[in-house]
Length: 430
Image (cartoon, rainbow, N blue to C red; front, side):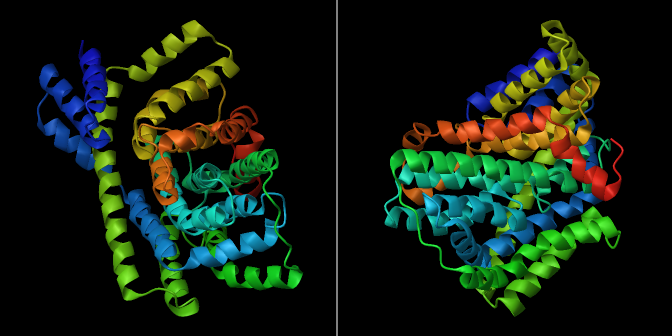
């Protein structure tokens, strides 16, 4: 009965439009009160969930991404992407994919990525004659690669939701190949739609211009290399790398590019504080929710139910993907990771999936949810920038969905995409 109350109240609050964090917390409180447990359990679990040293990486990575967003880094990355692939059919669409991938690497946030790239690329594409729905779909889907990059705070959240079963450093290394796979799939989708609609190709500016734009964008792109090199060499930990990222970004935007103003710095700091507060609230209430799920053995029950459907690993993985996708359309990325990881990670590991590989599966699934209403954060941001309705964009979204699902299937059923680099660079034994 307690489990029914937990699930029914949670989904009931979501249906009523209650924000996810409050829906999680209120459903846990209702269950605790029905169970007759001390109310102090609520605060103990929330504090224990947030009071973890590794979570220091979250505000730093968020702040670093906001500084990149407000510090003028996006324009230089866009110019580099245009010079590299702008001469291909549908050149601005291809440039958009590459630019979103590169900026996702330095921001680590799909929402920051679509905000920065969308503000630059969507108006530019509309001016050059590209349809608005195409411009928005390319931007919102390509921006999702930020969830897989070394600066992604969602990797930190997954590592801790996994209960210490996975190394943050291994996750950071593991995200690179899936990010490339996702970019390639998006390039194929963008090119296919461009050919179908007859979009023109741009002109190649020459290698001199390519190298000039590369030199301008390289200082910003170096943040990925600095984080990876520092962690792999042991100079700093994955948590400390976030503070290094902030320090480097401040020096870059103030002293090298000289594009950061005091007003934009304060705006970036305020947005980082707001985002961090939301994430930590989600972590706190989700810890309370996880406590109850552990108390009622939800993971074991879910495993038994899925075992009745099939014991074949490929079927189990497919079911997990479908469930995560559905849940991701209703919940924020961080909430989905925090709630679903303790349930499905043991099931996936029992079926033979490594926890690092499952982390990549989880991140791509949650990113897919960011582009799917009714939550669909990146979708709403992109549509707002493009001045188009979500319904109009959804009508032509299938090629881009297909690209995302193709990348998800590669990561799900080919472990090497996730595990090769951690094994090569870090000697990961998983």
